[in-house]
Length: 472
Image (cartoon, rainbow, N blue to C red; front, side, top):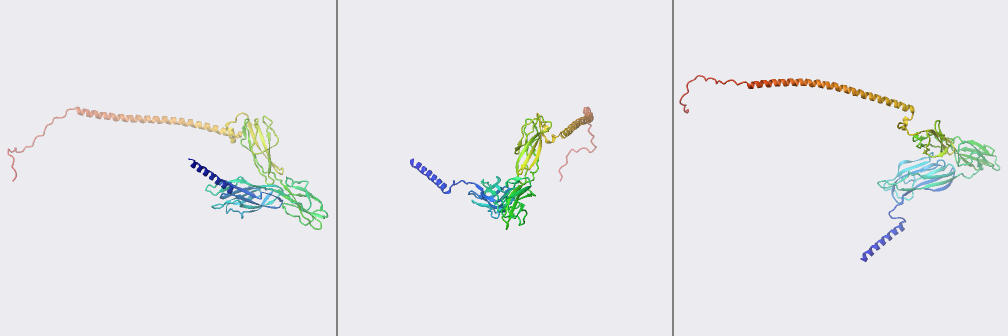
């Protein structure tokens, strides 16, 4: 009995050793996969305004074969600009949709795959993209949650488990010429809504003049014409976006140029109208205000709301502007009308506002008032008049139909009665005739039958006494 138990223990020990050896040699469980991941290379770095960054978007399948990838990527449109999306280096052989990007929205999209058996790789290049640095600051490039990596199986299982990000530090290049500053637009990372900008620079020893330019080209150098002998200038931006002030000095020759960036946004966010889930509530209910808008240059910064009680409200109900997000839930309010003014601010301080009116009533709301179409008194009155007229007409038509049906029934009843009487008379006549015929036959049967007298025999010879014999 001991020998079989020892054999079992040895087998268990041998299995444990085998599993441990698999862990040591493979570095992971034998039957488990780590899942696919999307990466960005490089993941960080410091770059100068006007410079270029080559960014690779990479797939690690985690030891499994995949045959389809969807990579949705976002980047700060005010800091980076795509200048060369290169899909030629991609492992993707079949593009479901052509690679697309938007420098205005800061988006980049890849969607494609390859035939069976797919690909199993730890560093498959989806694409390499070249960005140009537009302005100083921090720039984060990342994958959106809508990205997918599909296993090469009949179900197309999404095995994406992690997505990487890249954070770049963007700096203004060190001055090659005069040291420049601005009393009006001093922070290159801040957005301003004033298009007129003043710049000053430190004088250069031996300089006989300076050339400057103000444009939207980060690497542009001023021309070789002396524009001023002073050490300051005032310029104006003619459009929204990132502008660059360039200046250089002329001594015995033209020196290097210094570039100073400024960000200008004079356009407010797009107009919008806040929406109420219900614009008629009771004093026991809270309202919900929803709103959204966009800004083309600097981007949205935040929203603010102010509550204003209109004339006729039973309480003051006015508030100051407070910062909020959408959706905004109103407090429970006394009866009356309230206007909610929502302001949208962009990062340059431009403002756009919209408003919505909420009506609060004491007690319950009539059933018809819960229909937005009927909340206008004129519309409601018209509807009720029309409905009342329809009810009266329907009732009158019903009564008319009942009366007409009754008259028709009486007429039909009289006709049936006359027809029945006519048929009864005809039947009575037939019965009378049958009775007469029966009486006639009865009388005939009662009378005695006549006496029978046989007819007389005709004369002839007397009968013979002998019968004739047989013929010869």
